Length: 398
Image 1 (cartoon, rainbow, N blue to C red):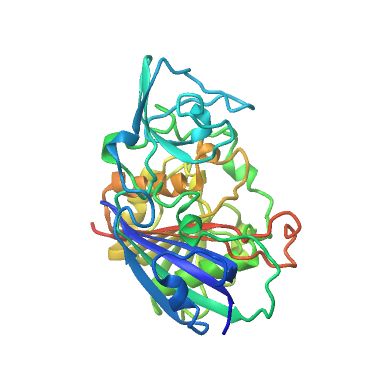
Image 2: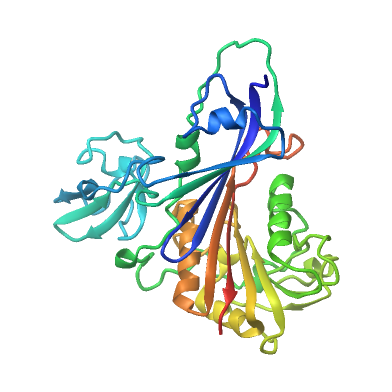
């Protein structure tokens, strides 16, 4: 019987505001050794490639259940806890590594377990140490990518599948009403480099900003939610749109900052050069498009709510808005605090943008992590995994 496999696990759950799907690819799974949630190990061992098995878990089964006792009060805290490198300004609503508060939480300085700051004043902090997924029913879907058989066992590491797929972020993207993001106070969308964007982007950059695996995953995502024969607006476009060729008879209009990059984009039917930070009004008629996409660029917008209002205006009722985030960007041009946020918090703040703007419904988030980076990639010797991706999509209500 086969004893090895590569499997993509999808963690499906629903918060008050959105439907979430967090995908995690795990290679070299060993059915003899690894620990699976529920009965998934026995079921998956019998499946061939491209088959799916799913199981549902009640709150408390996959991660510890929510407990009010995990809301901890720290008296007389330091205003800016030291990380060993720098000091951090605390913002209610944000997650921080447990190691920031290691002494009062009886932890250790390098503990990266996320805990959420609920309240903060001069005399105390309230820290929520519950798992970000605590309290949610969870469904796990496992897609077998490929299988193999190893004749002899020679040791190796053990994978706790439930721990791997729930760790390092899932749950952190869900907004909480009582402690909605403030992110920097009065000027959260300032940038370290406030120089003119047209000058900064005046030289074309005909290079990919994602590895090949990640680019294929983005194209696959757009291919699943967009339709043939539609009008698509590519916001903050460049020389590649990531809209798959399998989507036929689509009119794709791009908006970007560099004319040469836009001219090199063979997927565009037309384009315009326009600086959204200088003028967030999009020079397009109302209800002109069936869908809009923005790929790994929303972190550069200084006035995202105004731009989202414009996107709602130019989309037809029921039109789709799809946003993609990665963990890479042009340094200094991203909005303040973006670099300091956990990747799932970045997804959460974009979700909050949509909620605050008010013209979008049926909101979904999806993350993809763990796929191998192509061997020929220029960073393959430094990073074994493909670029992680974080999607948000919704429908326009207007």
